[in-house]
Structures are given as structure tokens and as C-alpha cells.
Length: 200
Length: 324
Image (cartoon, chains in turn cyan, yellow):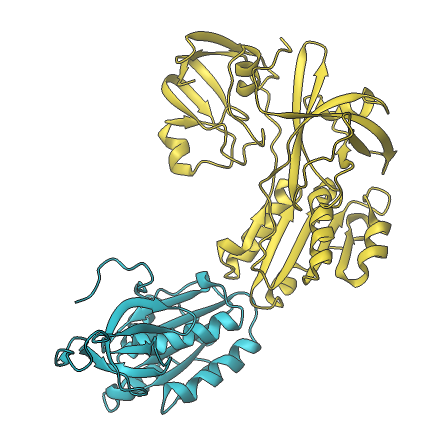
């Protein structure tokens, strides 16, 4: 059902420890493992200049919090939701300088929203690394009502705001950090196929 | 010999003013002979000045330092370099008010990145010239910028008072003879996110600024520099131009590009200083050593021996065949 080769589809790659004066990490769920993997190759003292912000979400209870804390970062925060953590990131960036490296790992929804905050703060794209880990669930914007539905796993998917059945596309908005959902049965309302799990 | 095969459009200008800026630096004002407006340019652009010096056609790149909006005249500043190949000495000793010269159209290999939240400029010595045009442009746009300018002494520094008067606290001047040094690490560590850095000056200074920034984690995309190399001298050698079916001799103080042009072969170029890549030429075969000298090709390309930059590269050995 998806159109292949859409260029706005984000590309992710494994986090690597870079040279920098401050390393800001934000991870959710299994994204914690990406930080732990990076830690195996990071130079000694790397985490003395690192701040880690972690949102356990579905990975709660799997010991990621204590494993991250054991890295001894200069600052460590565990938060309940991405929404609660984003303003913290904005404040950290407001006080940050050139030489800051950003590391984002976990779900695409978190990565996309953190990217929006970072770019708004003036961070250069080249200073942001992104590694997708865990759920494939998507953050989707309904192109009709503009409402955003989080954690979409089906195709088509029902817009949580206006109720239209949406085809979830690979077409991605970097500005709002979401995939685009387009009404799938506009010509003949009510004929949308039944939703099937597409993004596990 | 002075015949140029270069068919790119040129601008004929008359020198209308020469000012002694310091004991070593002169400023030249060029006005178009046809009275038509000169092409507009953006801060960081340069022109190639053609000088007919006897049998030798010299072409040297000089950064435009005038306000980018001004189309009635261009200004350049030239530092006298007695150890150079003669272009700057020609400008200093032979060019007078009323002299006719020919310019290339402006080319910008050192443009401002308008996405920057702040522009942090570094200049050393005569490297101040492109930053003068850049600052004029940035001030007009109301962009945040700051200049750090290293000079040998108050007397040797060009445009110090003009800079202090025009830009006030946005300019910091460091005088070597007073033991003043740019506090580079502190300065770089204090820059806001989204800052772009620009540096023009002596090679050692540029390497210092760029490598310090890289070491602090600045992305390469935020680092901008311009450095024109003078074509180095060396032993004379011969080059076979396969496409033109010609064999040419390159003199000890001549560049390969100049020799190609002197033979009447049209070869592309822009910066003539090993920076832009425009003159890149394919090497068909060689038996000897390529002396690359440019800072355009990668280390792998230098080692590969498939390409040369005739504006600054030389050759030592038995035979060099180019696809030109």
C-alpha cells in the first residue's frame, strides 16, 4: 500500500560517540540500548560531559534506567512521557553552545519531536544523530484536520481527531516530526479496508 | 605569448585611485571603462586581475573588499610580496592611476551561509579583505556577527580605525607585537548554537582555527575558509596535452595552467589558487612524481594520480600526459 522511495522518509544510523564539549542524549524505550552500545566504544570520561534524558515507556521494568545511570553521566533524568521531557531539552539547548552533540534513540515519534526542538534552538543538522530502536509505531498527522495521532500501528489508521480513515504514508514532515496520513476512502466514504497491523 | 585562449567574458577597468594603506598594503579602485554598472557580487567574492607584464600574462585572484551593493567601482587591497612570483610587485610598482586592467567577473568561493544564527569571522593580515565585504553585507541584513582580527602591529594592521569606528565592539583586534593573542578555545566554546565560522589569513592561522573548532565538535558544514595558494616555483618540465596534440614546456616560475594558456589552449579555471576545483584535469599517464600542492583533491585522489589541478600542481619526472 505504501509508495516506495519517498525521499522525506527519515534515515537512521547507529549512534557513535563524537568529539564535543557537551553530549545531550534523549532516548525512549529500547533506545536506551543504543546508548549502552555506544558506551562500549566511547572513550573514558565521555559521559562526564553527557546528559541523559530517558523515557522508559514500554521498556519500563527492564533495567535500562539503572544501566544508564551506571554510565555516570553528568546529568540523568528519567521522565514519564516524551511531552514532559521535551521542554527540558529546550531549556538545556537554550544554555548550550557550539560543540554540543545531540544523540536521539528510540521511537520515531520521540526522535521527530526532539529534532523539532533541537532545530528550533539552532542546532545544526550535522550535530544530531538519530538511531531508531524499538517500536515501529508512527506519529501521524492527518492532512485534513491537522490533528496528530501518536503510536499508530495499523494501516489504514483512524484519525484520533476527525475520525477519517487514513492511509499512513512514508511522506514525512520534518517541521512537525510526523508522517502524513491521507483519507483512504474519500471517493466512497465507508469503503475503507479493515485496519491491519503494519507498524509493530 | 601574452595571447590568452581564455574566452570567458572580462571587464575592462581603469585604476582611478591608489591608496597606501600601510607600508606594505595598497588599495586600488577600479572603475569600468565603459561606464556601465559592474556586476553585483556577494561578500567573500574575488576577481582575477589580469596584468600584462611584458611577455607574461599574470592572473592573480584578489578578494573584493568594497560594499557588495556598489556597482560603480570595485576595491581590492594588495600586499607587496617581494618573495612572490611578481603579481603583487607589478600591482605595487607598475600600476598607476589611469592604468588599464582587465578583470574576470566576480566569483564567490567563500560565501556567507545565511542559515547561520551568528557569523564568527577570523582574519589574519591581508586576509581581512573578504571579511570587509562580508561584514558590510551582514550589517546591512542586521545579522549577528563578530570579527577577530590578528595583525602584526598597530602600524601594519590594515583598516584598524575604520573597523573600530564602523563596528565598535563587534571587532576585536589582536596585535602580535603587544603579545595579544586570539583566545580561541574560550571564544569558540562560548558561541551560541547555529554559529558559522569563517577564516581567511595565513595558512598556520587557518589550520589553527579550523582544527581547534573541529576538535571542539563543530560540524564541518559550519566551518568556512578561503586560502589562495600562489603557484609554487620548481624545476622546469614538459607536459604532453593529448587532446590538443601539443607538447608544452612549463617554466620554473610558471604554473602548468599558465603554460597551457600560453600555448593557446583554452583551459577552465576560477580561483587559480588550488581551492575551487574548476581546473581539475585528468592525468592520462605519467612517469615521475606529481607535486599536487592543491587543497581541493582528497588525500586519496592525490595518491591516486588520476587528476591534477594545473593552477598549482607541478611535475617532476620523465613524462606527464594530460587529457587537455
